[in-house]
Amino acid sequence: MKRASFKHVFFAALSILALSLSTRPFAAQGETVGVDRLYVLDCGIGHALDQSRWSPGVNVGVPMDVSDNCYLIHHARGYLLWDTGIGDAVAAMPDGLPGQNGAPSWRRQKTLVAQLEQLGVKPSDIRFVAVSHTHPDHIGNVELFPQAMLLVQRLEYEWPLPSGGARFNPEHPVTKLAGDYDVFGDGSVVILSTPGHTPGHQSLLVKLPKTGAVILSGDAAHFKDNWDNRRVPAFNTDKDQTLSSMQRIADLLAQNHAQLWINHDLAQTSQQKHAPDFYD
Ligand SMILES: [Zn+2]
Image (cartoon, rainbow, N blue to C red; front, side):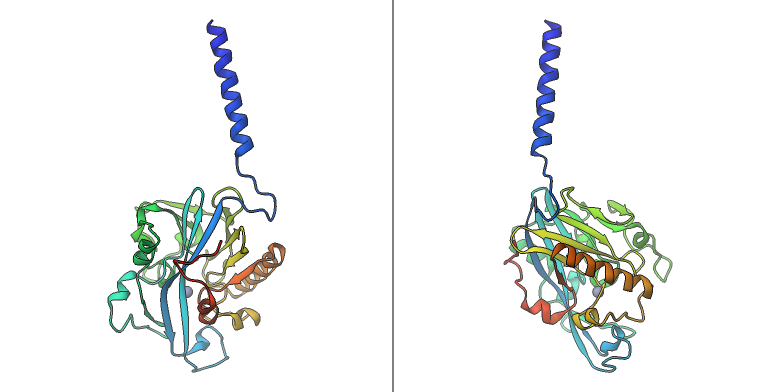
């Protein structure tokens, strides 16, 4: 009787294992599993007095407006927020946040929290927060999601601020990455290591069922003309790395028949569907 019941449990366990293996999402290359929605969120508008801070020697002294997007991705295994924009507090500043040392000034038409709320998403519903890098227009709201697992390259996490301080709250749960990272394990949402703008800069490949593959640039390039001409801002931490990362993105775009969505390209952003509408 004891042996029979052991056998019974053993084979029951085996069949559960077999079932879980057979239903485990497995994506062949190009196939999409698990991810079904991508929302573009308005996370600020920047105004720079001189475009050439991003395009050395080109359009010197010409002002430029830039978008600042966050992207919310829904996967069967939870929400990933890609970049968090300029801080929500800026929405309450009538004249916005002034820029310093040539950096853009920022305005916010609506808060990130309000846009999530409109989607019925609470900050506590966000499972992962991944940031392309640690400039203020990307990490402004990380601490609105204190329980979310932060996905950031170790090199970025440990890169000291000019003041010597840390870039993140040391209490925030974090997975420090060393290269590419398949967030949900099925190939549908993959963080791409694309250093150069900063030491641990990263981009994101998302494979949507209908839209197809999209690469979210981070600040690997700031707008299309810079991308097309492979221009590197003078303040990037490594010019050669930046150029290699752009080439890597170009290769992945071709391999995946993907679109490149450039975070700060206002002309492109203006053409996109914004939340509550979404890409599927
Ligand atoms: Zn930026």
